[in-house]
Each structure stands twice: as structure tokens, then as C-alpha cells.
Amino acid sequence: MNRLSTQLGKLNLQNPVTVASGTFGTEYSAFYDLNILGAYVSKTITPEPKIGNPPPRLYETQAGMLNSIGLQNPGLNAFINENLPELKAQLSVPIIVSISAESTNLFAMMIRHLEATRMVDAYELNVSCPNVENEGIAFGQDPYVVMRLISELRPLTDKELIVKLSPNVTDIAKIAKAAESGGADSIALINTLFGMALDYQTGKSFIAKGICGYSGPAIKPIALANTWKVSQAVKIPILAMGGIITWQDALEFFYAGASAIALGTANFYNPKAVPDCLEGLNDFLEKHDLDLCDLIGKALIPA
Ligand SMILES: Cc1cc2nc3c(=O)[nH]c(=O)nc-3n(C[C@H](O)[C@H](O)[C@H](O)COP(=O)(O)O)c2cc1C
Image (cartoon, rainbow, N blue to C red):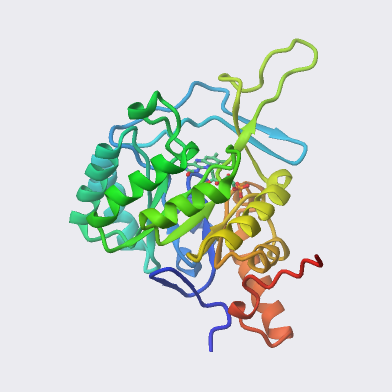
């Protein structure tokens, strides 16, 4: 009996530990066999190649990391022709492809092309990008836009549709409900928060673009609260992330309602964050004679 097995919608995972989009690549196979993962999540792919934002675009803070990568990626065609076949050859675990686009039609075009490869197990829709059909406001800011987007994409695939939400909204539960009613199979949360860092002596930004994405241990309590909030609002499962560094952090997210978790910034601190997390979770469950599913959503919140 595998105590760590879990279900994320249509995906049966051998364990709940995945990696956060954009923080992980096959380079980590220098440290361990990537087939120990619950699932592999790709960097977000866009219709065309992107060179990303100008440097400097990474900065370490007291308790986290600022990044302004700007969705640098090789674009859909190169991903389909080069990266995806390589991933498929190397991995036996589910491959979750993260995609983003500036319009519903472009999202749909990406799914059609990726479906034709028959190499994708699930799609993670990164809805934090600007929507050109809606004055450049990110898709994920507006519940109605999210519902419309998912209901347009839903008929294009039977594969797991995961909607990845931004915490930079007034009420993340509303957005999650909209994704659910549009036909999403699961919710991933949270993407990075807005952040910024300045040199106190000169006032100069440490990141070329100024405002950027904030991740790592500092955002864990926020991610945990959002996980709990969303788990109370929707019936579909949650893939949680945001400041998870250790197996103890991961357990908190299962109690808060996550069916699986992703390690992001943790991989920068510790290249063996995934195997360390798996070992700790397994030992904990063995010691207490529990299965992972016994813990999911079992947070004790005294009134
Ligand atoms: C360097 C870097 C690049 C990222 N790139 C992406 C990306 O391409 N797509 C995406 O959906 N999220 C991206 N993220 C956000 C992460 O997937 C994750 O949601 C966020 O960092 C919170 O998790 P963490 O605190 O464990 O890192 C990126 C984060 C970092 C630090």
C-alpha cells in the first residue's frame, strides 16, 4: 500500500509532490531520478518564443525571492518539437504543461496543437497574463472572464484542466468558483505576489522592471490561508504552492485542503528539496500509521 498516493482530479499520482512552473527543469536529474515526482510541471509556454524581461531579474530577500523572468520560453512550436518529446522520453510520471496566452483564441490554439501530440497528461492554465480582449487586465483578475475562458477551452480536451490562480486579487475564492463553474478539474494556487526591493542608499530597484513576483517562505502563511479559503469554496481538488520548503510545510497544506503540492523556490535553496520532502512525508505517515488522504482538509480551526 502506497501511503503517499493521491488523486488530483483525473490524475492518479504516486505521491503528492510536484514542482512549481518556472522553477524547475530536467537539470535536476543531476541530483535524483525525476521519476520520483508525483508529476512534472513545465515552465509556462506561450504561443511565440519570449526572451523575457531585461536583467537584473532575480533578487533574494530576507525570507524569499523576487523574480521578473517575464515568461521567458522557447514558444509553442519549439516546445512541441524539441522539449516535449525529450520530457516524454525521460519521464514516466504525468507531464503537466503550463500554458499562457493573451487571448482565448490563442489559449485554444495552444491546446489544439498540444492535444495533437498525445504527450500531455494535464494542462495548467496560467491566467496571470494580460488579456488583450479585456484592456490588458490579467484573465485571472475577473471571475466572469475566467469562467468564459475555461468554458471555451473545456470542450477541446478530456485531459485534466488545472487553473492556476493569482493571489493578487480581492477574493481568490470567487475566482476559484468561477473556474469550477467553467469546467476546471482542479485549481493550482498561488502564483507569486507582487513585490519590489530598492537599494536604500540610492533608491535604485534591484530588479530592472521594479515591481515583480515574490515567492518563498515569506508567502507561506498567505498561500496556506488561500488554500484553506478556496478548499471551503469549491469541490474540485487543489494543487497548492507558495513558500513550501520542507515536508512539515507540505503537511500544513494537506490539512488546509490541498490534494497535492508543488515545490518552487525551495528548489533554489535545496536542489534535493523534492526527495527530502518525500522522505519526510513518508516517515511521518509511517510513524503515525496514516495515509495521506486521511489528512487532506482536516485542519482543526477552533471557531
Ligand atoms: C523564478 C520563477 C519563475 C516562475 N515562472 C513561472 C511560470 O513560468 N509560470 C507560472 O505559472 N508560475 C511561475 N512562477 C511561480 C511559481 O510557479 C509559484 O507559483 C510561486 O513561486 C509560489 O511558489 P514558491 O513560493 O514555492 O516558489 C515562477 C516563480 C519563480 C520563483
